[in-house]
Image (cartoon, rainbow, N blue to C red; front, side):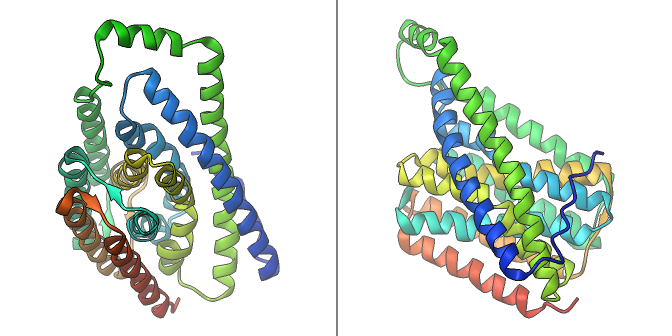
Length: 332
């Protein structure tokens, strides 16, 4: 595997790393704006709903930093950072991002999002809890199982997708006009540039945050489940927040749910297939906390078919409490 470029930021002053973090966050936010706009137009061109687009293309793109960090850490034998990054990212996504977005504006949900995608996330989280929680290890067979389940889910998602409700000839005519060379090239370029900038900026952000955290004496598990997790979750934060502000709720909620599914099945699955990993006993507590949070999100989205501002606040406070607990157990 080709390693990510190394950044020697450990020796830099804390304020320099803080500036690097701020610059990376701003660049990621701008890139997320391009992704939301271009992916929405692409979804319309191929007759796919924004929810499906959020659960697939955008979710995969915003999960790219998790892929890079988790795979690199796994090959370096740093299972705590590798798996901690995924567990922490999913908690961050559901609590700070989905909860924070709901605090800004209540998010309507659909039966498909709750029963199809929410159920998949809940069952997947419980499966990962069982696989890793028992022996604190993820081996190649378990990784292959997770990765195979991702392709099963994606195949079902596309097989059951619904096109926009309109007559077939009208849809064909609309697709033909939307696939004009100038328009499609522009949107594909914006999408690719946005994803590339997100990956590069998130990579720089992670190294700056890790350098600052290491200087404060944090353990690898705590770094992975908090600082690194927050860094790799910035794309989801920017994309989801922009989506909810623009009232594109399917894209906003779909990105978070889809990203969490990608993290558990795709990222952990591929990492486990390529290199077995061992983790700290603290992983059990974090996995239980993640499972509980996924269940709460599922119940919130199901009750009233919306995620209200109060429910968003509850999710935000749960994630905050989890962070405080993790930092309280910071001994390396």
